[in-house]
Length: 179
Ligand SMILES: [Zn+2]
Picture 1 (cartoon, rainbow, N blue to C red):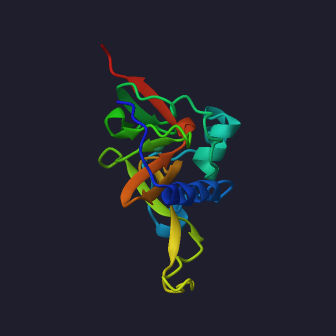
Picture 2 (tube, rainbow, N blue to C red):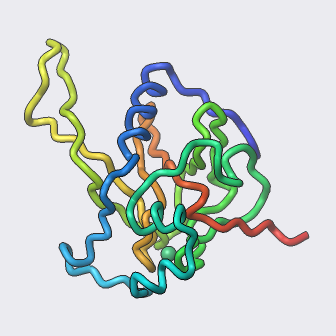
């Protein structure tokens, strides 16, 4: 069900900045740091063989696609979205939000047991009512990745007190509902 979501200008600007912040960010494929062991593991050569250079940059290096360049940003046919790294069903059209002014792929929820999150990078602290930065208000850009193969899919943002997954369409494969 395609619908253009209504966000205030403040939220729009904030999320635009956060989207840009994802460009070139290092991936948080943090198995080495956290001890978490992904179910699907491949060598770097295997990843490169199965992905295009751009897909490799997104899934394995945490890069962000240019807006409006994937197959999935502009409409919402019924179906399911699968991780390009391991084919896990990670999102469904039921929870997709079309947000044409942005040009990425947005979902209100992921499937159960499909995605994990990590800290991508720390972003500047929020400003208090007095206009001063609050050093205690640590904020971070939250990355979203596949729980089965660890591939970076995008980011999880909070916009107007809604949690939104802002996902690279090129990290996904779509399967339409069969008639
Ligand atoms: Zn995966």
